[in-house]
Image (cartoon, rainbow, N blue to C red):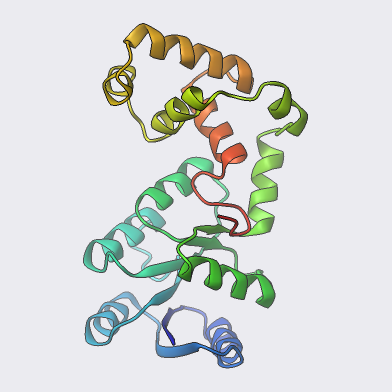
Length: 218
């Protein structure tokens, strides 16, 4: 049985979530809270597996700070956040802080359940419509990926770039020289059709599923 806590500011939406969860076998609603202090108290008093969190629960916190604060106190808690953003950098930072899924409130019931299943199986999830929007924003060209497929070593370096490693740190991590790292970085820029590190991070997110795996695929 998956124990769930809902932290939602909009009563109508909270009621809809509650009714929907009641129709799915294996899900149990522990608490329904409407403010941040109530949420912390609920999580402290009773074990919870999954938190369904409204990004506007605490208007004094940004989405990033909200996730960081909750994960700091409850590191094992799975969190699905309902927000509004489609910013690659913020999504990546949320994922690094431990967020498990990002959804809009227009998500269908079917996809919502799919997100829960994915998260509880240890996979991150990004709503399909958000993933499509990001792909369009980044001018993703699938044909180019096949023609300019990156090597295994380039993939390793790309992952470290996304994790904000410097050339020196990458060289130490992979036991290669800094000039070799620089050469691989230049090749990545050419293959992925971008001009700088920010472009590499953006394309890595779009093409490889960072920071979330679109549609919950492992």
